[in-house]
Length: 219
Ligand SMILES: O=C(O)c1ccccc1N[C@@H]1O[C@H](COP(=O)(O)O)[C@@H](O)[C@H]1O
Image (cartoon, rainbow, N blue to C red; front, top):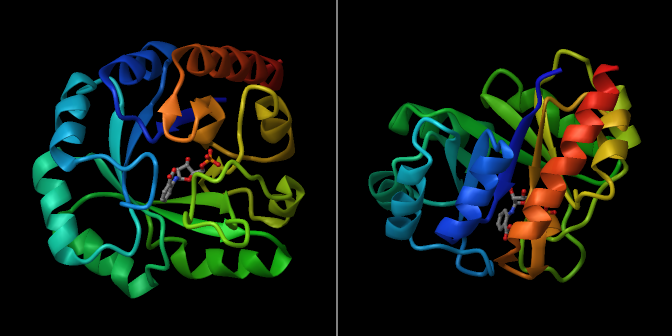
């Protein structure tokens, strides 16, 4: 089984290198001022150039308008846009047409009824990112380090391609892969020593655990 691995919320050359050395297929940069992982588009552009050809660079935005997206796309030249807000199906189509970039649309889940969001975006977004709903009072739509009940995803058609996120870490990645058909995983706070502070040793530990989990799934 091939598994895409996205390390999200990177801000330094050292942690980008750790993600690439570990085998990340995607590296994510957050453009959301309330986030401790928020990054300047020019710095993201500098960091992503180091990854050219090694991993896809993903720009993560939240209900961003065209002016904001224009600035990010020009400065960073991402390979993919992650839309992590309440972007409608129509807005996803508009963004795809404007930038000609693949879109990873995040949907937040807590219970079975939340799965109804998936149908309208299938075939519109290039890929779905299934994340947990933020806890009450959180300022962040993602990056909260909380999981949802992965058993919910058992109800999904096996053909649906999604990345799984929300509270993943070295300790639970094996269980997450056993419980779901995720073809990709996305992790942020699970490889941090404090909010917004990525930790090289935690990144290494995560890749070790994900490798073991993948091996067990293939056996
Ligand atoms: O990480 C953030 O601060 C963030 C801010 C705004 C939108 C999305 C954000 N992060 C995304 O959320 C997932 C899950 O994070 P975690 O692993 O539970 O901490 C993360 O992978 C980002 O794509």
